[in-house]
Length: 245
View 1 (cartoon, rainbow, N blue to C red):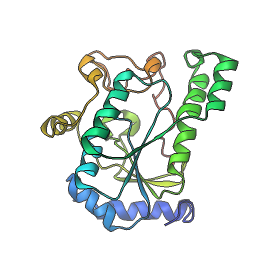
View 2: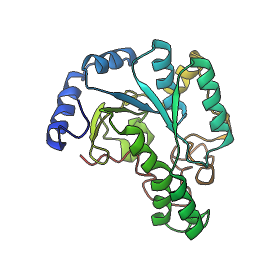
View 3: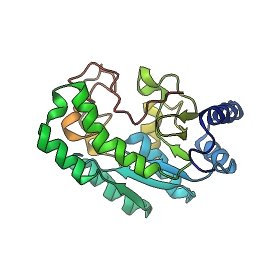
View 4: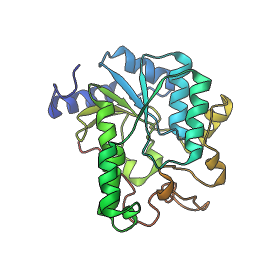
């Protein structure tokens, strides 16, 4: 299957059919077996090296699945995130392709608006996310037919209506969310059981970890996305995972 050839209508029908077949399927092994058996084309997994994504990386790496793995290095990540990348590569001997922003676009943004323009408005913050995340992601997904993510329904209200398969209009690709019904406790239990590398910031109150200037620790009673773009009151999304279908 070549990305962009089916069109939105056919792709939407396809994901509905796939989700119907998965109504009674729950285990990670069954989900990935089903995915591969469908022969949907080139499959890629994007990891932010967060806890959910580390579960998926462990499953792909230990089972040597025919799935390419990539990550986005925005240039403003925590050192602890780079440490997780290094330990993950070492543990699983898994080639994780790193995509970085276009250096000219970053230079122009910082030159014209300064290094901290994202604090000034939602529009500026989204512009920074576009330069550092969206454009590299488009390159990473080019030619791919399925995009695997670590999204869970319980992560935010904005993700409560997710299904196992989604058609992502913004990137014109089928998205697969195998951890859809997992809780955060499920994720942590899995990581501890299999001794999967984790970001040390998780023990300091950081749950959802992005760029260093845009992430803070959260209090025990706060929503897990409260630490992302903490100065905003928006839906706390950068544009990577907004499904328009």
